Image (tube, rainbow over all chains, first blue to last red; front, top):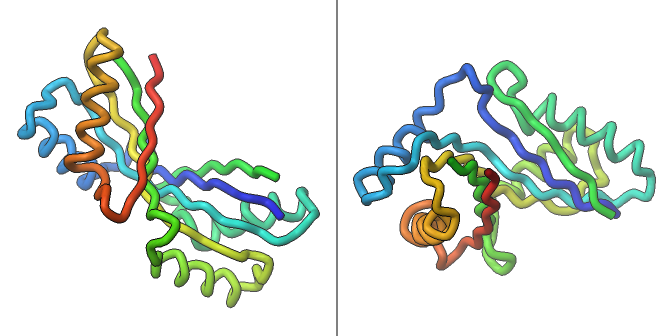
Length: 81
Length: 81
């Protein structure tokens, strides 16, 4: 059984309008020091297998196929026992 | 200047229909080992200040006021120089 944490972020050269909106809201609320906000996804999965290599290979494929859009998003993940 | 990473997750006792939908999609795609999927937000902020205590206090307030909904979501954050 592995617990997997997946982080999906917009690529640096891709606009993030949601992040910009949040940054502007924070400025309006008085947090003028906030320079940049980027918003991504954070996923926690549990995978019921004992084969770590297989689990990693599966997560890599899941990210490419469903969890992230590799054209505009980066992803990284961590496996924990 | 601090880089802040904020993780916002649905509380354990709150339903996460988006996560359930992704889990079902993964099963359909052949990843039957995936037991649970929870989907949250991952935010990266840069804060232009040298005062770490102030930055932490600000981030705590931002989370409570805007970035997370404390009724149904948990949050945690890391500050990096």
